[in-house]
Length: 322
Ligand code: NAX
Image (cartoon, rainbow, N blue to C red; front, side, top):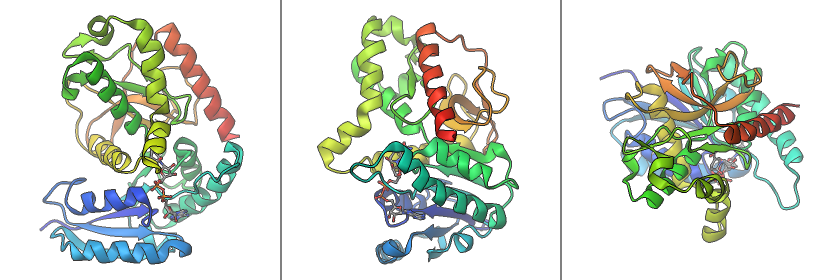
């Protein structure tokens, strides 16, 4: 039997965790041959909820789970962690400005960055879901100088999945035939779902859909506003689809990317081939060589309509960085 992989998850009492923990424990993240140790963080106010979730995890008797640690201390949770899923964050309260949200979350991710720096495995993969996820990932990276900057990621995969699903619906092609869907920039309303390189069953999306106006307007806006639409319909924000996207992302990072495909993830922009400001966590089209070793897909021609939007998202991230 292989050694257990230590997976740290924050926000363990929350909605996304309630879905992702069970999928990870079942083998959905690292496969059915890899034993795992779950190390789950919560804040004291929600520790009781987490204790209930741990009881349920135990009651599943997952064969792959060798140990579960639940705590309110990030230094304990991140000890020797090899993958960290930073899901827990402070939600936006009614009337709260985005700038206040950034300040409140900065405190969390400064502390967690320091704890990761001190305690985690040096080659840990840090994947941030909690919003504003790009800037939270950047703050974590700044506070964990011992960990290579290429090991920090922010989730834009849910946006990519939403975009693929929408193109599949519109074109009538199955989702698996939609390839090379890029989300550029920030996971916010300035995100850029780029349809210009998408292939639908091997053909350019614009050729299959034959409605550039729809792609430039309704398609982009629907993807950008999908989170709000789910919230309005369900009365709660996206959870199972977010957990699914986080799992998809880690699988894409850990396994070599198949030919003719790429995936979107927020990564450190240092040395990127598209002239985006350095020292941001920015979503790019990426390919993995396996084990979290990824490179940005280079040489794509950027459509002027898309370029303008990428610059607006870049500007927003520079402002968030402060
Ligand atoms: P919930 O509010 O259900 O759960 C968050 C949990 O995090 C709570 O139990 C809370 O007590 C805990 N928490 C807060 N501060 C913490 C800290 N310092 N350490 C450990 N735990 C802490 O939110 P949920 O629906 O699970 O969403 C979690 C985060 O994901 C939110 O920030 C949300 O905005 C973000 N999302 C990001 C997405 C993305 O695509 N990047 C999509 C889904 C989601 O909106």
